[in-house]
Image (cartoon, rainbow, N blue to C red):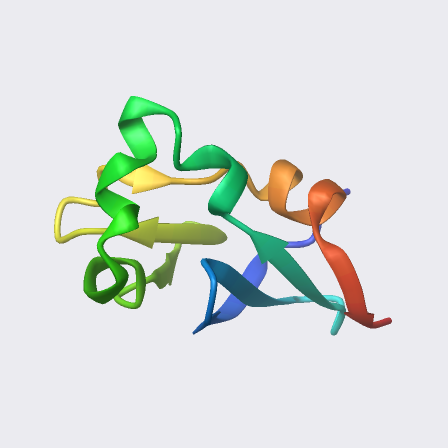
Length: 82
């Protein structure tokens, strides 16, 4: 079963430090996704830094219009702490 995201902290260069409910911490780069239309608003660093956790994943915006599949974050993220 895929663990849920419980906290997130934005880092420089469009990287997220993500903590999962199993206590794993992973570093996830959003930069490769910025070329896609849906993720272009994240190029604004101030907006990127407004990341929040809802529904077990990361979201942006008051209406949560931008998010990432937690599976992508978990499988593509680099383990910082296991």
